[in-house]
Length: 263
Length: 357
Image (tube, rainbow over all chains, first blue to last red; front, side, top):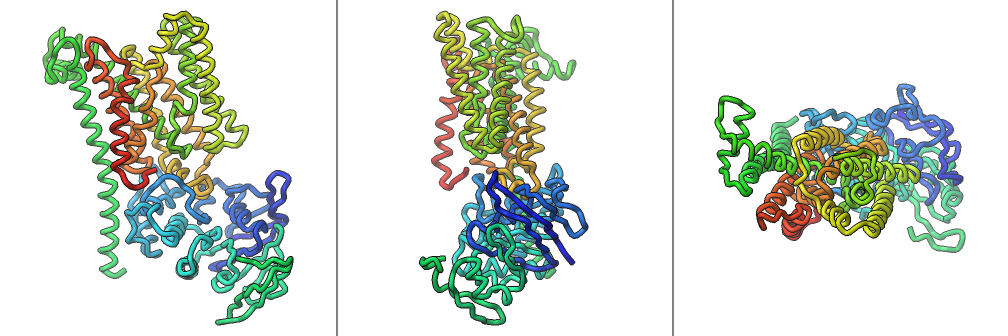
């Protein structure tokens, strides 16, 4: 079954074209990772799918509805968005932050069902011990889990994650990725993430989309896609690709324009 | 689900329920304090009457035949003091709710009717009426009408400028600051060309006073404040979501621009309808929400009503002190709100160690 079908999607900031003629399919219960160099359009694509930005083209949901014609609240019931980091200025507790995920479903007052859903989600992500702590007091990894919990409380079919591991240390990177993978398995939702780290993408994704200059360069499973040729073509980097536990991993060697990559 | 998990579930829910319960308790306590202070405030003045006589006079009119009072006390309470006390309550409430809403939608701790040019516009409107006698309506409503019209004009201009550049918190604040300086300069010009008595009247108007209140004015202020506060409270979740950033708010289903415009208009309407009668009472709109936020947190479901009640308490207390401290001289309430509120605010600010905004 297909969760989202993107047809001929384009987006520009003024005269600067960011995405051009993209076609993509997000399948059922899969983790699809968008990889590519800075400026290739990964984050923009995530924001277009969630209609935070308004692209041209068609985004069809599983029941054939066009996302572009839906009310924002309806979109929020289908798609949950996890930002790169929390940008808000107002402090709230972890419980209230996650409860905010019920916004698309809330009426005048909070129902018992909403509270139940928050408790259930907190336990799913193991953040219940921080329930009444201020969100601002949490560590980076804990914050990321709370933001994922907030998006999950929307009861979405698709979870969008914008570079969920970029501000985290190795341990928390793995924790967050394990969390996403177990959620996809347990709750049958699909996850689309923009991600810089090719090795994390290779290890946890079912399929990869390689973006270059706003266009899809290649789509496929990590093993077939993460080749030395593709990495050279997309990133301009010479790398060695090895294999472990049926997953590829990439060791970058040198930048082909003479500079050593430091990422 | 295993039994031990069920216990944890109920612990979490009870923990949250008691967390919410404390906020509701604060709101109820504030209401009780207002009722108490209102009674005390009505007893104070040149004629000495007791709180019991005040409550009897109020109840005698509300429930005729059940309570007894004298004509003298009835006149003092109903004709002289009660409308001023109620004006203090509703004006304080309205200014604080407007401030809390503006700080929330603009995600800025300095946002208030004053920093967004709304109060300067009201002052200009009043100055125009006082110094040049020019305005949109005539007679006793000249100053009031001018202040109201210019206040709404300022907020529409802020909206128009922000709309042109894209409605974000930054564009609205910058447009508001530009409008504030423009109207301040125009008021200064009017004061420069005005006669000294007229300038004195403008300065007195700018200091704010509840002395100009009457029952019909209280009625208008109460109606607008209560209606707009209820309207703003329906946007509580939207304002909470805006606090997490525009992109997150959109992803949670909030129509960000529409919410910002509507909340801005409700907040402006409240402010306009109050300061056109009272003059510019500063500080309440800025600080009452901060004081409340330190106690009940940033959830606008509770912050909006609780700010309103704290604002009502602050203004009523300030007016009561202003009326009595140098009696028979009555100080402008705008001065007293800062004298009373700033030390309290600094005390809370220093006492609260962790970041609250």
